[in-house]
Amino acid sequence: LPVSHVLQAASETNAALLGSNEFEKAQILEWTTKVFSPIVESHDLLEQVNELVRSTTFVGQDVDFTLADLLLYARLHETVASLSAKEGYKLNNVCRWFDFIQHQESVVAAATAVGLDTVEIDLNAPKIQRPAIV
Amino acid sequence: MATFKLQIPAVSKESFGFHEALKAAIAVSAFAPKTKVEGAAPCNSVRLTDAKDASKYISDANAIVSYLYWKNTNLTAEKFLSVEHKLLDWDSLNLSPLLIAADAPEKRQIVLTLLDNAIQNFKLDASVTPANVIIFADVYSLINGPEELEPFETLKSFYSKFAAHPFFQKSLNLAIEKTKGQTAEISSEQIPISEE
Image (cartoon, rainbow over all chains, first blue to last red; front, side):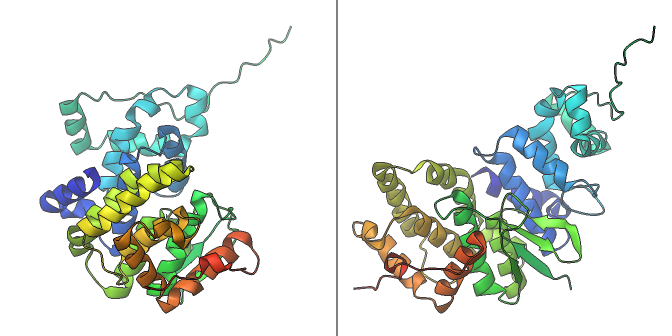
């Protein structure tokens, strides 16, 4: 039962990772469950997070990252790394969120420890190939 | 204090989306009856949204059930996690994939056996808790009629006791009405079975 274990571990080591109120806690429960769910495809998850972070900095809290951000970062790492420039621009909310999370000091240290490389993300619009004017 | 509205998409009664809508509808009826409920909502799944800030929402039925319960009872999330979360975890990660795939009678029998064992192992009574709401909705959405529960004594007892709660029929009507966008029609098969 991975969700129970990870929530319990977070509550024992850094309770702030579980959110600051009941609504945030429920959001973190939702996204933590989705991270481990065998019926949620990574690309669907990417699109869901893209919608969620359209106008927010973090997944579950206004002021700081939570367990949901950390687990989603780890689950989506491979998927984000495989996006083409065009796909990345289309999913620019989640790419912007991912880039912000992967550069947090504590995340860099944890990612290095488990062998997750920094993903190069270009948030600029892809260049359009225009026909040459003769 | 923030107020929330429950958004329910238009889905067929046989779909997994209806199953999710039923969980949320029971939670609203049991824990937060003043919550505004919108049918045929422009979202892919059931969603509890902050009425003043649409960017804040919960879009998972189990998390919605949990939140409405926490809000209603003032039970701390930490305490809830220690008491009930293992069953929610089991429901989301182990049972849900089986529910989606349980289209044939023999597969339903396997899932019903698992549910019967779970109710015994987790020592569930028919009180109105998030775990019971979620397991009840699982059973309701799985079976074609109460007669399918005859071989499962524990499950049958749990189902009939929970279905006897006065809010259940209201919840069912709400889920049907909001997912169809029309007035509910309840067949005799949906009427809660008695203990005997």
